[in-house]
Every structure is written in C-alpha cells, then in structure tokens.
Length: 359
Image 1 (spheres, rainbow, N blue to C red):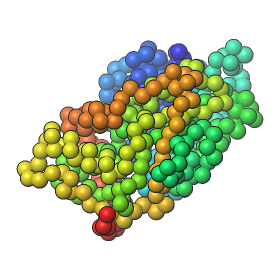
Image 2: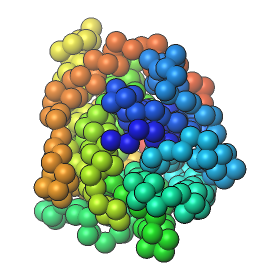
Image 3: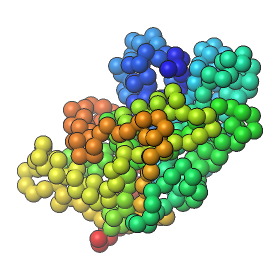
Image 4: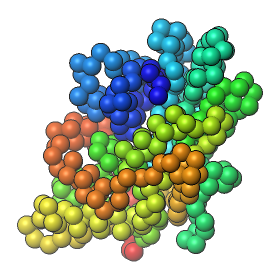
C-alpha cells in the first residue's frame, strides 16, 4: 500500500471518506482542497490533531503550489477527487465546470507528469495517478439496455458530464503520450454520511424533516445505480493497490432504483424512526418540471473490478440508506452548518422557478 498520498478535493463528500479510510490504514495524507461550497473541514473533524493528515487550502490548478507539494512530500500516489459535480449547477454555470474539471485537471496532470519524469526509475514505476470520474460520461440508457462497461463509448449529455469526459480523455492522453501511470475509475451515484444536501438523498431527507415539499423531477421514473461512499472508497483503494496502469474500472453498487422509489423509501424510514404528527412524509412528494436533458437511466457493470481485483460492494441499499438517515438525524449540527446562506440561495435559484407538474 502507498505510504504517502496527495489527494485533491479531500474535504468533499467522497474525498473526505477516502481520507478517513486512508488514515485508518496508516497512510500519510496530503489533502489539497479549495474549500468551495461542497468542501467542508467538519468532514475531517476527527483528524484535527492528526500530524499525518496535512491539510492545504488551495487549488489543484495552482501549478506552483502543486509543484511545491510534490517536491516537499514526495507522494507515492496522487488521487484526483476534486471536481464540480452537480448537474443542476453545471446547467446554470457550465464555465465553472470547465475551469475546474477540465483546466484544473490539465494543470494537475502537467505538473505531476513533469515531477514524475524527474524521479529515479524505481520511484517512477511505483508511482500512480488515480482519477475519480463518473458513469455520467457514458450518457443515458433505456430501461432494457445493458449496463455501462469500461468500453462503452462516451456520450455525455450535461455540461457536468462533458467536463468529466474531457478530464478522463486528458488522463488517458497523458498516459499514452508521456507514459504517466494512470488509473481511472467511473462510479455510479454515491450516497452516505456527509453528502452535501443538494444531492437527492440528503435533499429529500432534510426537506422532509423540515415539513417542506419533496421536489421530484418529472415523473420520478429516472433510474440510478446507488453505491455507498464507503464501498466506493474501498474500491478506489483496491484499484490504486492492484489496478493495471492505463486501465479504467467501473464501480457500482448493483442497486438500481428509480428516483421516486428512493424518495418513497426515505419517507418510509422516516415514518418509522421519526413519525410526523399526522400522515406520512410521502404526502410531501411534489413533482416539478424536469431537469433539461435529464438522463433516463445509469447502470454500471462492475464485473471487471470484481474479477480482476476481487472487490464487491459490502452495503445493500436498504440497510445503507437506513444507516445514512440515522447519521443525518444524529448530526444535526453538521447539517445546519452546511446549509448556509449560500446554500439557501442556490436552492432558491434552482427550484423556485420550477412549476409543479403532474406525475
């Protein structure tokens, strides 16, 4: 296992989970994060006095800073979690996604490659650059289409997906052009503790607790594969440990659900653990105008990582969702801190203009 890792975006939802697991394994972590709206040091509160977790507030696109970190800490691997990752935000501000996901990744790759080329041969051979991506680069599926494989052609449909596809292509290009030993992972929808509450599960959960409408896009029939964030991060660690340079690995939870089914399941759990004074939380479900270009279905075929690396998801969706809801219920202070004025402004901007629709 790599002893020192440089992680970009390590204060975000997925990145912070990986950081916590890495420290449990005894790895030293250099954590570079810009701390935008979704980056939150409270995710890493348990590492506050941990000398082997070195947090650096900065941008992966800052070439001078990244160059200094590489020279000073000599990491065995660089893992790129940093990304703008919310489709709705990408529709409203696509340029921000290009700046971070494309230009930021390009800058990071260039600096890492130059530093890697200066290393002694044995260090060069052992080094890895791992890029974390999404299944959305593959586009959309019909209900009866086979799941995405690593060889599925890219057909991104949102500015977010297009920016991640571009970054994936850059990573592959740096491997083919310069020989940089890269690894790519493409995951399905993540869920779990500490997820920023603009994503489906925490959004619906917190709206329900507030007694507010649960805004479901369109008919709610869009299908996603759900992957627990802890399973995702364990898969990334396994790819880093034993994946073949230049290869990509799909990571999925084998848990396809429609958005409406997920929302109803959240309501059922809340009805059980924190009942309303009258009625069900499901009474709050409200169908709103659909997202532009909303992909119908994502599904991941993760047979490659299962066969080659022996990874399989540990969480089933039912118990994982219940545990996730319990975490939010037990961490109200964390929730209140992340639901800042900026978050409220975003919610107003994205949802206020969406008229109610019929299912």
